Length: 152
Image (cartoon, rainbow, N blue to C red):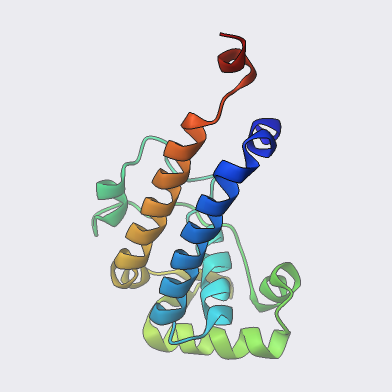
């Protein structure tokens, strides 16, 4: 698919940049201008609702449900967030404290961090924006000619 995207670069890239820009502006607004805080929560969220343990059959309504069973999380802590994201440890520490104050993350007994159901609920408009972004990109990519489509 990478070759197809490169072949349709003039069609795909402007839509991607415009959509990503709108998404990042929305992130900046929701996080009071603090994209580092967004990134810290995104890293924690990636480990909380990980590709390895998320139910691939789960739909959006089930994800939003307060009755949804919690998925098994992958351990993550301040140091690993800093190493993975490139954000300085002290900055990550401050962002973690702010996210805990907002009720969007919590510390597990082993010290690992996890996103909360409150984050899921409070950030639903941002999740909707990201769904719109992904849906738009999927629609666009379906229009990109693949080698099989080009041969017709």
